Image 1 (cartoon, one colour):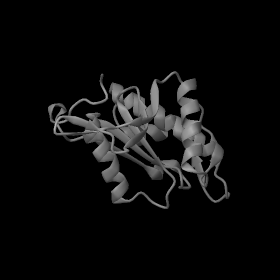
Image 2 (spheres, one colour):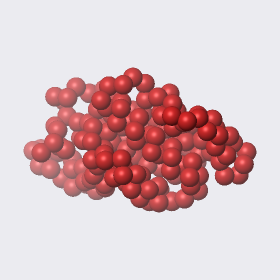
Image 3 (cartoon, helix red, strand yellow):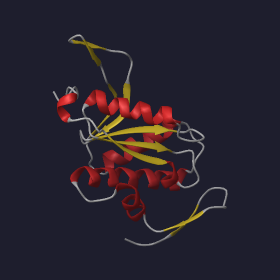
Image 4 (tube, helix red, strand yellow):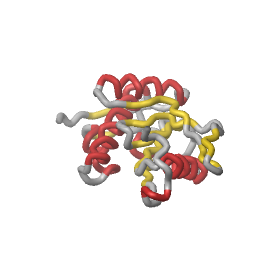
Length: 166
């Protein structure tokens, strides 16, 4: 991949390198789920480099869905996530921004900073769904890698009903 210089909007920030290298610094090893997270982050970085911060969350979601389609990644947008209570599936209004390749939940934000409540939201989604890995991506930052959190479901697979598989 080519190295290139990027001048973010506002001209104050400069980032060198390709998006894959930036993703590897956040994602870690090359297991299948990490390859998916690396691809998602590469696309998100590409979008952020093109548009910069300041748009609505829905605009970044639309762009990311477009890029996921172009990349050939399977995804579901605004997937309902029911809560199991006393053997009944209840629609409590939870919606996953994106579920990519049935293995990564992506929650998008455009906030001043990621707060513990945002992380708690994603951890709840991971627990309810049985999905192991989630990405919390805040586009409202000068350099996108500073707005990314990768969270892992610490619960055993058997402790969460696989609500999204089936």
